[in-house]
Amino acid sequence: MENSIFFKTDAVRWRDLGGGVRRRMMGHDDRIMMVEVEFDGGAVGMAHTHPHTQSSRIERGSFEVTVGGETAVLHAGDGFFVPSGVEHGVRALEAGAIVDVFAPAREDFL
Image 1 (cartoon, helix red, strand yellow):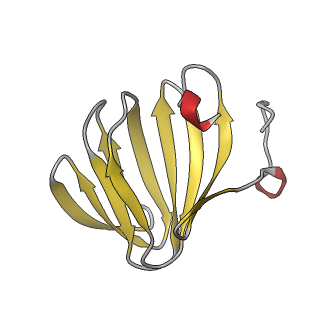
Image 2: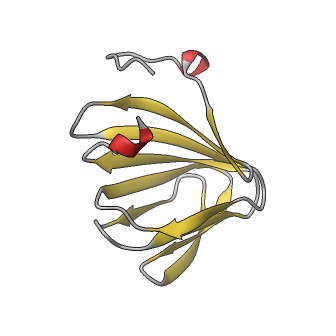
């Protein structure tokens, strides 16, 4: 994705991550990044850690979210926060999407 001030979702390409998960970049610079991640029902975002701080909002659907060993079921409009280095993962209880914001930007996504 070419980074620009404005972006239109129909012009941003999806990257298939396998297992019923795909993502697209929605804007970034070196300090912050926004990403939309879509999940098929039952798809899993495997537990992982990274040095980036993350704040996420459930855009649609419902998810079982685990952050630092605590689990909650979240629905559209809900969100969660992941401090740097804390293990986290999700399971889509139905098809849905999550918008993730990372600081600093995730170079591994570029």
